[in-house]
Length: 267
Ligand SMILES: [Zn+2]
Ligand SMILES: [Zn+2]
Image (cartoon, rainbow, N blue to C red):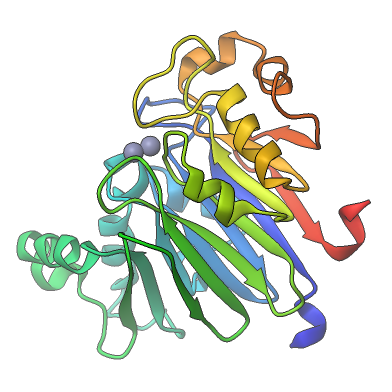
């Protein structure tokens, strides 16, 4: 088990937003640590992109939700409904959902609407809420999770996943410029950061390439992947905008892109 656990494989499932797009599905990222599979957000289209990545919903051990906007959570209901077909028997491993405070209430409201159609067999589903007012941290079997609140929604948190060997990947979720994200991302091997709109088109609650670059530079991350692109982003040179503030390794996310994070890659 430990020998498997020397890298984190990141697959961008959806690099887009709420805007329907054949090229960019709504937000979702998968991380694989050994055979353990972690999903970060599940916007519409996530289950199809999982299949395109040779993964089924039954392979997912954890879902982490950065916040509750539909472009990040809407596929949860179809995910749970599909898990029950046929008769709750295909899932062999429990599903753990990790999210900021308020998720249990969010889930209860979904079950008030959909009832038993989305309720997974006893013992196969649990929720872990993280603090949304300050930093939080928890240890799981193969990794630790640190979180901080970020500037978007009340429940919004960003996650840092760290393996037992010390590799770390940070997922920003949606956020405006956040000092807390700079701290969380410090020295990480990869920062997957939202960059929703081009420079000059800033809106509250979101970043642009140069703001994301500023966070990455200040945090001294080893690699930056920009994602969560509204269509306007595909009309401009996002790399050039990011280069105003960040000079390290940089990738622009595309659906089904894989990024291997391993100790060997760092020089
Ligand atoms: Zn959002
Ligand atoms: Zn979003």
